[in-house]
Amino acid sequence: MVDAPSSGTSEQNKLSNQSASDFETGLSEDEQLDIRVWLRLLTCANLIERRVRKNLRDKFDTTLPRFDVLAQVDRTPDGQPMRELSRRMMVTNGNITPLVDRLVEDKLIKRDPSPEDRRVQHIRLTTDGKQALDEMIPAHVSWVNNLMANLDRDDASQLYALLGELKASIQTAERDED
Image (cartoon, rainbow, N blue to C red; front, side, top):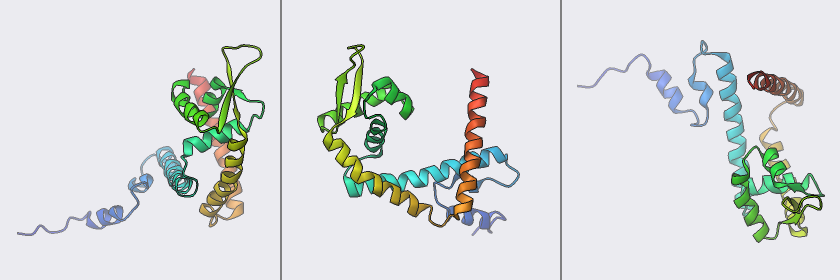
């Protein structure tokens, strides 16, 4: 005997046709708006990150974390301590050290002792690291621009402003909890 389709079949079909990374569409309209916004942000970030990771791997044989470290180190030409690099990348020193070690082995960055405190190592780009990053940055910008090309520029500006407000709200909430 074949079961009759349930009343939720069309909804189930609709959900099964959606991207696995499209978390927020599985929520009903009566779900909390804050959760839907958060899930939409995650979905967008995941979609962009997945494409950037793939492109970095395919075009430059590198990873997003390696690119991120190079880009962060490039922001401080005089070098930055590991603790500052960890803070900027929002990871612990323990998480970033093996990545930095590999980039040093690949001669893309170097460690120089701090003149003030020999226990502190300043991380700097090498010439090869700067050259590699200079090749990757325009491609990275192009990929992100292409992913957002269908978003109206006024809408993009408004979204940027709204996300700035959200960031400030989150930072305030974090300070209030500490």
